[in-house]
Length: 193
Image (cartoon, one colour):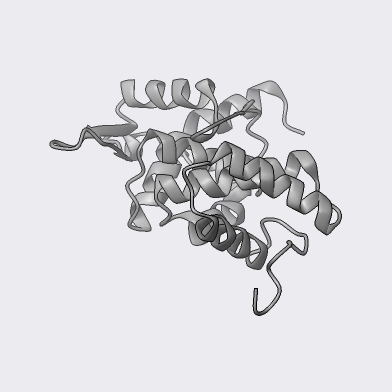
């Protein structure tokens, strides 16, 4: 468990490090995708950031994450670009990243978790991330232990994501099961169904 100062240091460098790592992997997340990556880093990979996420239709969100991102932007540690034509936002490494010696030092203990996050979810777009993060959140809250409780958890995903096709939800569930993000034999996932 990290003390308050250690957690604050970790959170202060996270925006620039995560933006750089995602950019190196070819991703340019917007604010929603960035927030979802932070959620996954904390929830799945157990990096003790101490954020309190709430589940919304766009997936787990946290105002503190966005506040830390805004602070990093004001320090030129990340760059937030507005893409003309579609109003999208992308987050890139900032100009001052290399001006802060030891910037990554608080995160060096979590390099493996960061690597796994990037390898597993780095190239997911916001739509894919929000579905996966919502499934992970619901699975962690309901902890299904049998097919009946898994079907109930799946019903909550359907309620939260009514605009998603059943096949899209099932594909995301299968992916999360195969990469170890969730566990449980899900109803309807047997061969031939």
